[in-house]
Image (spheres, rainbow, N blue to C red):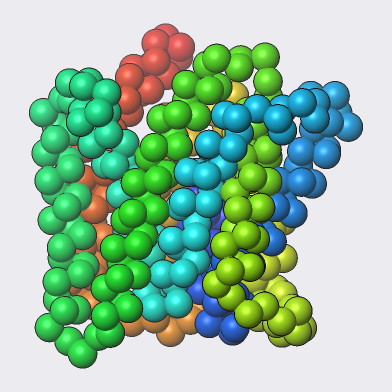
Length: 303
């Protein structure tokens, strides 16, 4: 069941980038549709946890949920949804894989934690991978918005890294609360913030939901992407550890690039593929220590 759940997480998270792209290309307001996705998914999950008596409404009054919602959901996905108006879903997935590198940078810069040499090499290799993806396109006739979109995703991943480090501290300090309930609460806060942003920046017409592409994209992202995907992810965290489920970040970029090429006719060059491989290599090196510990623990249990 663990392997099946892991395979589903990789497949689900790898395909959400294309689902976002289909929705925004079909005319879905990026901030409003993102807010609708996370607020509805978070609300349904939270009410389910309350019904199962694994959460209480008092959790919504905790300031920790507000901050994690502002970083993990609002900061990360407002940038991603807006950027996918101008960049391909595959490129968005690859740039999103820089999240672990952002975490390492924050740990070494602000938390003063000493990083292993292989992790520093991983950051350098990952940065080279980003350059391989971005620089060749600058010689082509690409819009300024394309470049801004790439930068926006990287900024969003910085917000993700901030939220990930903070949420780890929150989970440890609130060990009596279900991680699924905390994730649902932060999604509700993040979705509400997206609604506020949309109110001031977008002209939303409910008619966009009548389109098969936008409605289908939204339904897939709410049910499969947020509810099923995130629930499976946190189930894996509970059954294994935080490292193993997070390795979906290494698998999702090739899946996202592949489904984008197969089903949405996105173009890919050999330089793009080289960039994908380079970023994944860098990300694996950044997390090599944690992965090694996971493998050693498994061997110890088997023996």
